[in-house]
Image (cartoon, rainbow, N blue to C red; front, side):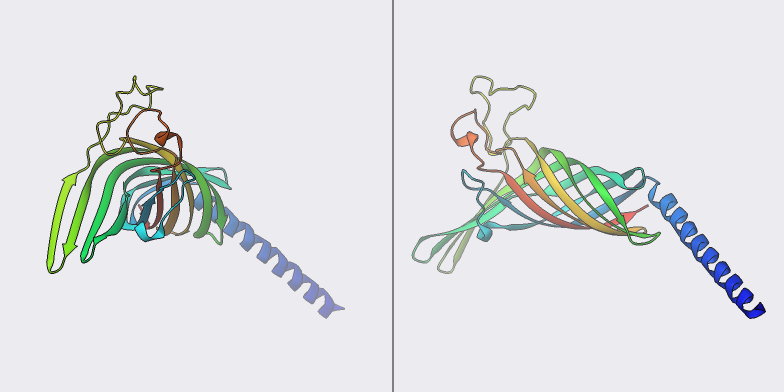
Length: 245
């Protein structure tokens, strides 16, 4: 009888200890994930620009580029968070064409945007330090630089020309095309779209992935038939490493 009582007491202590451990871990986890945090990120982009009325993509025209920026994570309770920041996003496309026998032309356009994302994410914690997240949200971007590069290769000869991107004089607050005066550049300066995001945070380090879907026709001009379709929209797949302070 005494042995049975001791065994029962040991089981009760074990259960109480396990519950205390779980509650303590949960409290640490909640405390860790409830704090806002900030950091920096840098990584690789694989970008393209749609080339058809239905937003079609030609995989042969993908361009490898980069992203770099600052990150802010703002918790909304124990389940949701806002992930924002300010990024430099290198986007664009590259295409090659055979003009005549032995002559090949390569055209690369590489605009650089200052981008502000506001993503709403769901936290998926593994333990008190490691969590995954998935989410989505809008972005607004301002074109600040970029290059247009053309390379022509013939038998034994390569000719390259490069120029800075000329940005159009569009203004998203106008609400129209200013009587057809919008244009004069190669790209609209303002771009808007949405991101789909996901990643894993390991304490002070993280891996972040996103797919950016541009919703703006980036070709300057008024509200004409060419601009009414899904042509000239950015599509960008990015993967970044993150360091939190």
